[in-house]
Length: 418
Image 1 (cartoon, one colour):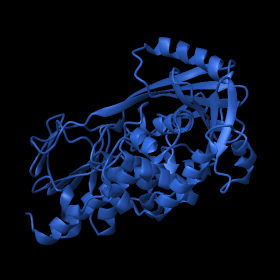
Image 2: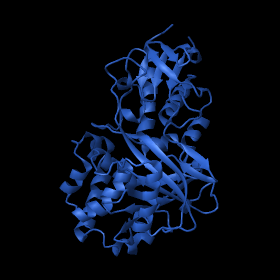
Image 3: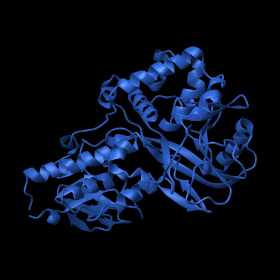
Image 4: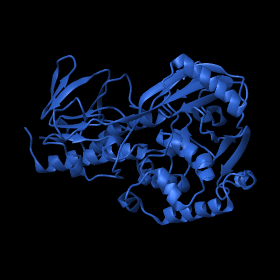
């Protein structure tokens, strides 16, 4: 049978599924992506609302991600870099903390921020050196502890943890207590140190669109929901049955396939609210952190501090909540508006949209950096992909898609399905 005659289906048109399709294409195959929504991207989406680009949740790309460097053209994406630091709102004041070795404009604000002791700054240098020398394989082979315990054991002061590490990494991990694995902390910290946080000029969804545009022989079926998957057969919600020599599930497999090997994944949720403002309180492209432990807001960011394709005419402010709150959308909006005034001094704003993201990041233990192609194989004809297989990151999504595709290719080289 010729390569293009094999029926290879990918369930889910997110980043992982798109990379899997690219790898299959590069080896001469013509896969089919079945996507339940109207466009690619999965959890990586950008909407156009009132002339503004609204990412569904505050997301960034770390340019040091090895898989991103392999699969993305950063110039084509017109990546806009954040400055390597953060503005911290504490006790009614705005202070900036950053890496002056990478951006000299952060030198004096960092020196005079009053955040962290001299010993804290020495420990940051020590941590930088440690992780620069550590390979990713070494990081993910270490015993796991919580990120909070890791920081305590490393010797950072309570003030440094509460005023910088906790608000900064809570926004990344989407949980307020830094219970996330220390492997993830070391990985993300290393990636920040070796590259930049960035956003495409067209918003975060430019990444999956870019991946889709690089596909030449992949067929897409949008607005198509899969009901179940059996060895060699895909059943759609409308009852249609598709013959499939091999299937890659690049989304949650629970509910699609009957096996004890697939467990339900718990998820972390968050809320992102967008506001229009006449001015920016943070002039430079820096994330704003709310360091008060009683605050509901975790971070704020003025998206128009970066170049964007759509500007809307004024300034666009996003506010991210990672704490559980139990508030209605209207009550949450009112509380956020109060906190913007209380902690940031921001009182001129107009509400645009609220995203309640129930499945923002998978809540995983025993985090892995990568998996072998054979490890992605669930049964004779089904392979698993998605960041839920490794760790919650764009890098993991790409690597898992790559590994699953290579698993299918290995299987095809050893078998001759009819």
